[in-house]
Image (cartoon, helix red, strand yellow):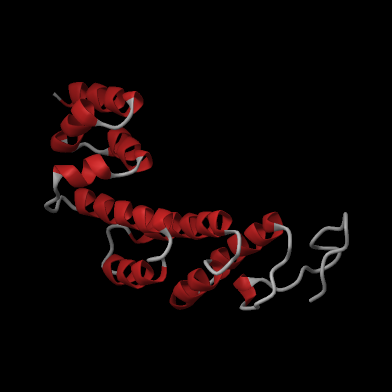
Length: 172
Protein backbone atom coordinates (compact mmCIF):
# COMPACT_ATOMS: atom_id res chain seq x y z
CA UNK A 1 0.00 0.00 0.00
CA UNK A 2 1.16 3.52 -0.59
CA UNK A 3 1.10 6.47 1.75
CA UNK A 4 -1.80 8.90 1.59
CA UNK A 5 -1.10 12.10 -0.29
CA UNK A 6 -1.59 15.38 1.58
CA UNK A 7 -5.25 16.30 1.54
CA UNK A 8 -6.23 12.93 0.11
CA UNK A 9 -8.64 10.47 1.59
CA UNK A 10 -8.04 6.89 2.45
CA UNK A 11 -10.36 5.82 -0.38
CA UNK A 12 -8.47 7.90 -2.98
CA UNK A 13 -5.02 6.73 -2.00
CA UNK A 14 -4.47 3.76 0.34
CA UNK A 15 -2.56 4.39 3.53
CA UNK A 16 0.53 2.48 4.56
CA UNK A 17 -0.23 -0.75 6.31
CA UNK A 18 -0.67 -0.42 10.04
CA UNK A 19 -0.44 -2.75 12.95
CA UNK A 20 -4.04 -3.78 12.23
CA UNK A 21 -2.70 -5.40 9.07
CA UNK A 22 0.35 -6.78 10.85
CA UNK A 23 2.87 -4.31 9.43
CA UNK A 24 5.67 -2.61 11.30
CA UNK A 25 5.34 0.74 9.49
CA UNK A 26 2.65 3.03 10.89
CA UNK A 27 0.57 5.56 8.97
CA UNK A 28 1.64 8.93 10.43
CA UNK A 29 -1.94 10.13 11.07
CA UNK A 30 -3.30 8.48 14.22
CA UNK A 31 -6.87 9.33 13.19
CA UNK A 32 -6.47 7.21 10.07
CA UNK A 33 -4.91 4.42 12.13
CA UNK A 34 -7.73 4.58 14.68
CA UNK A 35 -10.35 4.28 11.92
CA UNK A 36 -8.42 1.36 10.48
CA UNK A 37 -8.21 -0.36 13.87
CA UNK A 38 -11.95 0.09 14.41
CA UNK A 39 -12.68 -1.51 11.03
CA UNK A 40 -10.24 -4.33 11.73
CA UNK A 41 -11.89 -5.07 15.09
CA UNK A 42 -15.34 -4.97 13.47
CA UNK A 43 -14.24 -7.57 10.92
CA UNK A 44 -11.88 -9.77 12.94
CA UNK A 45 -12.78 -13.40 13.57
CA UNK A 46 -13.13 -14.12 17.30
CA UNK A 47 -10.14 -16.47 17.29
CA UNK A 48 -7.91 -13.74 15.79
CA UNK A 49 -9.02 -10.86 18.03
CA UNK A 50 -6.36 -11.35 20.71
CA UNK A 51 -3.60 -11.23 18.10
CA UNK A 52 -5.09 -8.10 16.59
CA UNK A 53 -5.32 -6.44 20.03
CA UNK A 54 -1.68 -7.33 20.70
CA UNK A 55 -0.61 -5.78 17.39
CA UNK A 56 -2.71 -2.64 17.90
CA UNK A 57 -1.18 -2.13 21.34
CA UNK A 58 2.25 -1.84 19.68
CA UNK A 59 1.14 1.44 18.09
CA UNK A 60 3.41 4.32 19.14
CA UNK A 61 0.35 6.43 20.07
CA UNK A 62 -0.48 4.42 23.17
CA UNK A 63 -3.62 6.31 24.22
CA UNK A 64 -5.21 5.94 20.79
CA UNK A 65 -4.30 2.26 20.62
CA UNK A 66 -5.71 1.67 24.08
CA UNK A 67 -8.92 3.43 23.09
CA UNK A 68 -9.28 1.23 19.99
CA UNK A 69 -8.70 -1.93 22.01
CA UNK A 70 -11.07 -0.84 24.78
CA UNK A 71 -13.77 -0.10 22.23
CA UNK A 72 -13.41 -3.70 21.05
CA UNK A 73 -13.38 -4.98 24.65
CA UNK A 74 -16.62 -3.12 25.38
CA UNK A 75 -18.38 -4.49 22.32
CA UNK A 76 -17.23 -8.08 22.71
CA UNK A 77 -17.68 -8.23 26.48
CA UNK A 78 -21.26 -7.00 26.10
CA UNK A 79 -21.90 -9.77 23.56
CA UNK A 80 -20.39 -12.50 25.74
CA UNK A 81 -21.33 -11.16 29.18
CA UNK A 82 -23.61 -13.90 30.49
CA UNK A 83 -22.55 -16.68 28.13
CA UNK A 84 -20.20 -19.58 28.75
CA UNK A 85 -17.47 -18.19 26.45
CA UNK A 86 -16.82 -15.09 28.56
CA UNK A 87 -14.31 -16.62 31.03
CA UNK A 88 -12.01 -18.03 28.33
CA UNK A 89 -12.24 -14.83 26.29
CA UNK A 90 -11.49 -12.74 29.40
CA UNK A 91 -8.50 -14.87 30.33
CA UNK A 92 -7.04 -14.68 26.83
CA UNK A 93 -7.45 -10.91 26.56
CA UNK A 94 -6.19 -10.29 30.10
CA UNK A 95 -2.77 -11.57 29.06
CA UNK A 96 -2.78 -9.49 25.88
CA UNK A 97 -3.67 -6.19 27.57
CA UNK A 98 -1.61 -6.72 30.74
CA UNK A 99 0.75 -3.83 29.92
CA UNK A 100 -2.08 -1.35 29.25
CA UNK A 101 -3.48 -0.03 32.55
CA UNK A 102 -6.71 1.37 31.08
CA UNK A 103 -7.54 -1.84 29.22
CA UNK A 104 -6.71 -3.89 32.32
CA UNK A 105 -9.16 -1.81 34.40
CA UNK A 106 -11.85 -2.01 31.74
CA UNK A 107 -11.53 -5.79 31.43
CA UNK A 108 -11.57 -6.12 35.24
CA UNK A 109 -14.74 -4.02 35.39
CA UNK A 110 -16.41 -6.17 32.73
CA UNK A 111 -15.57 -9.22 34.81
CA UNK A 112 -17.18 -7.60 37.86
CA UNK A 113 -20.23 -6.66 35.82
CA UNK A 114 -20.57 -10.30 34.80
CA UNK A 115 -20.25 -11.41 38.42
CA UNK A 116 -22.92 -8.95 39.57
CA UNK A 117 -25.20 -9.74 36.62
CA UNK A 118 -25.00 -13.48 37.29
CA UNK A 119 -25.61 -12.84 41.01
CA UNK A 120 -22.32 -14.44 41.98
CA UNK A 121 -20.39 -13.40 45.11
CA UNK A 122 -18.52 -10.09 44.94
CA UNK A 123 -16.86 -7.73 47.40
CA UNK A 124 -18.04 -4.19 48.05
CA UNK A 125 -14.48 -2.91 47.70
CA UNK A 126 -14.41 -4.22 44.12
CA UNK A 127 -17.45 -2.18 43.14
CA UNK A 128 -16.25 0.94 44.96
CA UNK A 129 -12.87 0.68 43.18
CA UNK A 130 -14.47 0.25 39.75
CA UNK A 131 -14.43 2.97 37.11
CA UNK A 132 -17.21 5.54 36.80
CA UNK A 133 -18.67 3.88 33.71
CA UNK A 134 -19.36 0.63 35.59
CA UNK A 135 -20.80 2.36 38.64
CA UNK A 136 -23.03 4.50 36.43
CA UNK A 137 -24.11 1.49 34.35
CA UNK A 138 -25.03 -0.49 37.44
CA UNK A 139 -26.82 2.47 39.01
CA UNK A 140 -28.91 2.79 35.85
CA UNK A 141 -29.44 -0.90 35.04
CA UNK A 142 -29.08 -3.11 38.10
CA UNK A 143 -32.09 -4.16 40.12
CA UNK A 144 -29.96 -5.67 42.89
CA UNK A 145 -30.73 -3.88 46.14
CA UNK A 146 -27.24 -4.53 47.50
CA UNK A 147 -25.63 -2.91 44.43
CA UNK A 148 -27.98 0.07 44.43
CA UNK A 149 -27.66 0.56 48.19
CA UNK A 150 -23.87 0.58 48.03
CA UNK A 151 -23.80 2.95 45.07
CA UNK A 152 -26.42 5.24 46.64
CA UNK A 153 -24.28 5.51 49.78
CA UNK A 154 -20.77 5.45 48.36
CA UNK A 155 -20.80 5.73 44.57
CA UNK A 156 -17.94 7.71 43.13
CA UNK A 157 -19.99 10.55 41.59
CA UNK A 158 -23.02 12.53 42.74
CA UNK A 159 -24.87 11.40 39.62
CA UNK A 160 -24.22 7.73 40.38
CA UNK A 161 -25.34 8.17 43.99
CA UNK A 162 -28.51 10.01 42.95
CA UNK A 163 -29.48 7.55 40.22
CA UNK A 164 -28.86 4.57 42.50
CA UNK A 165 -30.84 6.15 45.35
CA UNK A 166 -33.75 6.96 43.06
CA UNK A 167 -33.84 3.44 41.61
CA UNK A 168 -33.55 1.92 45.07
CA UNK A 169 -36.58 3.93 46.26
CA UNK A 170 -38.60 2.68 43.28
CA UNK A 171 -37.72 -0.94 44.12
CA UNK A 172 -39.16 -0.66 47.63
